[in-house]
Amino acid sequence: MFQPPRCPYRTCSKHLEPTPEAFIRHGHYRPKCRPHPVPRFRCRACRRTFSRQTFRMDYRDHRPDLNARLFRSIASGLGLRQSSRNLRLSLRCTELKFRKIARHLRRLNLNLRAELPSGSSFQLDEFETFEGRRNTRPLTIPMLIEKQSHFIVWAESATIRPRGTMTKARKAAMAEDEKRFGRRRDCSRRSLRRTLERGAELVSSRKAVLFETDQKTSYVGLAKEVFGSNRLVHGRTSSRLPRTVANPLFAINHTEAMARDLMGRLRRESWLVSKARRYLDLGLQIFMAYRNLVRRRFNQDEFSSAEMLGFAPRRLTETEVLGWRQDWGERSQHPLAA
Ligand SMILES: [Zn+2]
Image 1 (cartoon, rainbow, N blue to C red):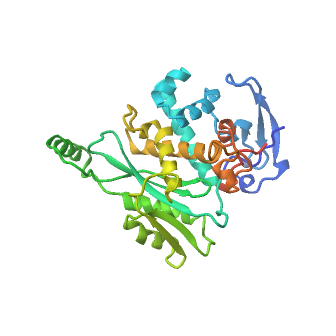
Image 2 (cartoon, rainbow, N blue to C red):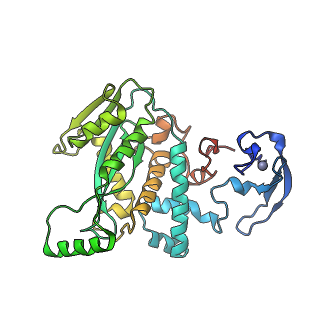
Image 3 (cartoon, protein in one colour):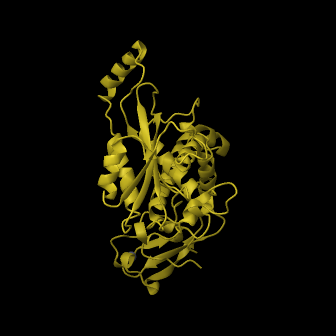
């Protein structure tokens, strides 16, 4: 029997300090998309009503039955159009579902983390892609992981300046873009810092922070600033070494390769394209949730990355990940709550 964990209205006193007797049953309703009636409740403090659905991620969805299938489909490298064909859903509905699911998973990713256990270390690398137009709108994606568990701490995209061979056609395309959007800015440093700060949040009480990267010079100063130069232990590996299992940066290389495979829009020679950077960032959150919470760390492993770090008691299913809403920060219900 479902008991409301709190009043869902943020302004109500029973939102922050709920008591079991604060909520009384208030009938039920029968949604078209579910076989069972959904119980309704009334809050004694603010007199407002709500239902069990108010606490669910699929609140107000018309086709909640497709959410887990869409998540699995996107996390397996399919594009939005092909997913919409498979699910017999319109492209627009699929896009809106994708955004809602991804924004939910972004909150879940941030809620389901804590201080890293001792002995853990970070690896960082950047990889490149583009938005909309390959030769004029390149992007960089800094990605930070925990080395042993392959847990992805953060990844986000940032615009960079086009570089490399400049043909006449490319220069013309760049001039055209510049007229439309203004000069393309290099925001890589800012997003690198944000990514490292996500890591610093997880090691605030640590005496030493182990951090491994390639030999790009800008990482040195930035890591010192973010982690503190007195506790930073920075290992640097040449990116010329063969990218094998023996490479010290194997964990991050492996995670990047998996991201390229499981996010169709990052594949090379693919028809899939990120039209706008913000939706690539949402796609990254879906990949992170799948990689950290749902998938095994390696094929022969029983555990997920989050499980290895103690952030989750077991591997979660796609349905569990898309269960309770997560927009109340620490007050949100755990995905495995009854
Ligand atoms: Zn209330």
